[in-house]
Length: 231
Image (cartoon, rainbow, N blue to C red; front, top):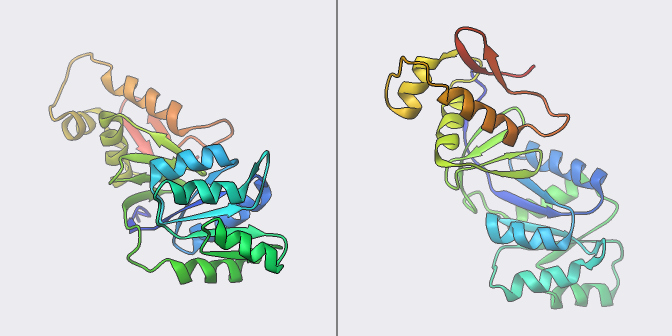
């Protein structure tokens, strides 16, 4: 039975240098129905905010080499109006004032507690906020609006044809697709010659969606075609 579903999940950008905390929060956000994207520093966080236009930004005040407060100010001065939450270690009057002056909507105190964190996220994200249509298989997400893929927190830019090929595979998970089916549905014709166009694009896709240590999702079925499956 297919596990690929059409989803409308708000994207939450998490700017967090602590890898362990970022991973825990990402898992909790995913299970709660959101699409997390992680940036490890203020510079990449701001770039991701500009590119993704997320529904919410969560920033750790203590970022390596940068202040989370400065990132909040930068986000606000650039015209972003999405909710911004700060992760803070202290709750003094000065801290709260600094949080608001930087443009953050609210703050969450460490240590990290999943239930309290998700409750705060839900408070600021209404179901209709930041809707995007997505296909999901395992940890791979394909955004049909931006034509970008996401896997384990990283955003993957695709060419038009790479997008169409990956979309066709994700619409038919665990189903062995012949070269003829792929050519007809992705390229729009039934090419029976010796062209290696599919192999070339499969190779490009694998290079983009498979990072070191990640499972191969696009499997070759020798003499037949390809299938999207784990392991």
